[in-house]
Length: 265
Image (cartoon, rainbow, N blue to C red; front, side, top):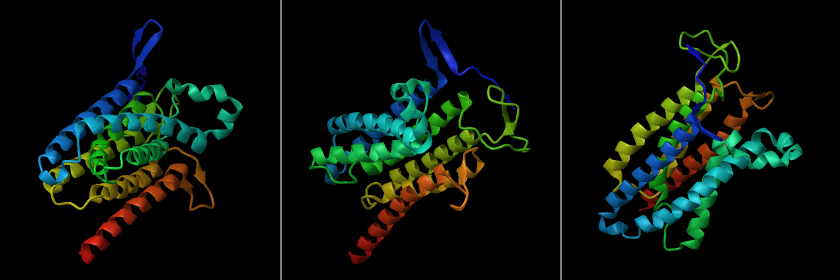
């Protein structure tokens, strides 16, 4: 497959509307809409009256800020620190690209922690178990944006489904962006039906822990197909793989703690 699409969807004078931005905005909108539906459904049970759509809307502001700031700073710190230290003005130019999914995850966790600190009536996993299901949608759609941008390329391959990104080079590569899109949609197809079946009986934190285990395990595998720098001597892992390990461990720790509590009960 030869891929040579213009990443700009529309030119409106000085304003450019890119496919990436459309997929990014669509993913956030769908996640927001799904989360509100899930909150409404969960509130129908008398034990969950501490959830409210008004509080969620306030939380959404925290999360969007945490997402953008975390994703940008994550890219700067994890991938191009020397460049941005030499060109600090470029840091604010988010529209030129340069976002990190692991940085976004850190930013979201910090934003959620700040929200809980200022809203002490909410418990740790009140919204978290819902958010991790909804976030699979932007996680998936953003990768389509990467594909349309011809960025985050896969390694060279002779596989029949290889893609030549003409805007970058003439090599046939793994469409790793599409692998991650499929990974996110698979996670959505697993978590949403499971949540609909078990949201009344699941222990708080179950879906949070399950998401972190499944997503970052899948992400670790997909990294083998990406054309990223490998650190020799550290098990030949990519930056993405090394960053995935703490998040995977966090998910495992949450699930173990839930299991231990259920056994004591």
